[in-house]
Image (cartoon, rainbow, N blue to C red; front, side, top):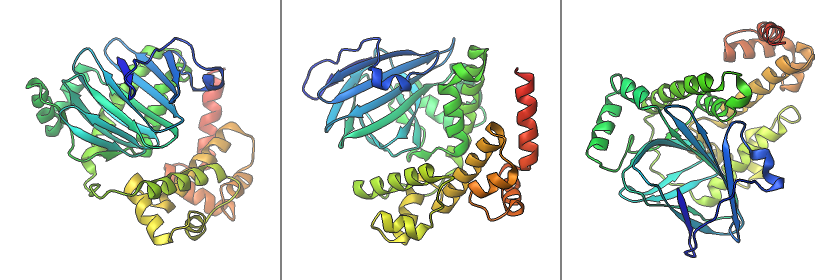
Length: 334
């Protein structure tokens, strides 16, 4: 894949990463980077015998645009992992992927432009599924069969007319895929299994979503939603914000924050807060020796009883069961 900056110069990639960005390197991935006045681009590739993942991090210092070309037609799932990804794809027009938004894309032409309107960190992944897996799921999902027919006609297309929003389950699978080198000693088998899982889960999640995402949100309001999400994640275990407090910090009404958050993430602010608290509690259960009472307090619950009830409702098993399963896993993997 070749990149050309807005100024017309081809970007030069090297197989080294800037020292201060080494933390973004994926285990088992082929990594390279390019630097310039625009900032830094890191692109990495994970490969199996019949599938692959392209993982990009853009550290943008000023408004930038890059045109890139590929040698062959491509079918892939594109997902924005951080910030808003805007692309102009030949034959499809402008595509906006807010954080966690995704779609399956077939691109027979080799020219696209990615645009960054503001400085910041942007991240996205392009997942190229196994042809065999895609053919199998086409038997279960008529929309995929129709999508593949357009590919046979070399017609640029997207699986859904509107983008879908990745669920928590999907984000966990993506994390497992990207960090497969630390998840299993049998990396190839693990990665292929996770790719198949992602094929199915992404389709189920996308087919189930029917709400209207055609209404656009002003960039400043999108930024406030991103900051709200970041604040919730960073304060877990330390402070439990109310929606009114979050809205006040973002200088918007609580009603507007609720609506905009739901438009971006397909969940309420409350549901996201509960998810973050539960995942934090799970980490404390499996990675520390803290008592369940102490964990309940750190997760923002008044007592262990209420925490245990909420935990079981969320995960379908109790905190005690989660800890025992973790202890057995650790013992087996010693």
